[in-house]
Length: 342
Ligand code: SF4
Image 1 (tube, protein in one colour):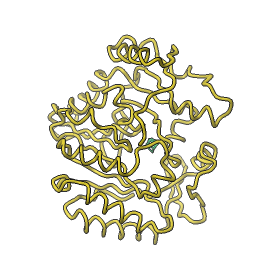
Image 2 (cartoon, helix red, strand yellow):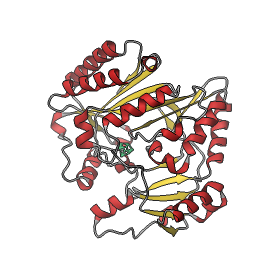
Image 3 (cartoon, rainbow, N blue to C red):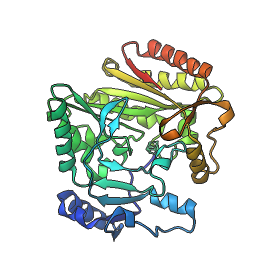
């Protein structure tokens, strides 16, 4: 079982101490005996312990920076929501394919923002602009927010904030089973709690440092019991030998474990594995022993933004994925909604 995340090293930006959560976290980490360093800005986080890139990368992934979110302009977050709500960035997981390896570049440490109320106020303004249309906010674009929330409770606060809102909805996705503190949050059905699921093979070989399949499924059942609308993102869909059987077993496990009422308002999002050339280089550096297959010749090139194209599966394979998953969803969760395949 993957343990609750406890940082090895904490940095605190001075301005964070102007907020109650900043103080609370400082006290908490001091009591836990964790080394705390001051930093004027997260950009100053240098000289992390470790003799080489490999070690420093791993230490950075268990370093937490407590800071203030300066820009309160939210990014858009298609296709699953209108905006990304920035409660944290970075993640302690070690999924080999993770896009954060390229987006966070040389700063793979985790940052949590203590000015939660200001962030929520910005969300309020975005909702007001679009009202009476509903505005959806995605809280896991730049982190696995559930994995650190047992320390900060910022996500819990956001769930309750959107629970009270008239025109807002929240959604996030996680690979962590540490959901207990979120079960009593007053969500009022406004938060869709999604779990990232995969075939056991993928979780075992490509997702170290995250909760195992059985733990995630068990957590999903708890969340459904707490009345949250539930969703599954199957990502990345990865074609290994025997993938059809592996994903079939995933659907069977979900069906066996979830209470029937949880399957009435259930969503699926399907995302095939993709990589870019720069990502491949970073992955090979961070996880030199990875089993992740990234051979350009076996893939189809798809032009992307900023001239960086991605390698996705070939057309016939994509069709095979869509047919196979369509069949499984129809067979096991006929009432569920397939939101998209990409
Ligand atoms: Fe990346 Fe999500 Fe894995 Fe964290 S859990 S390393 S955010 S893919």
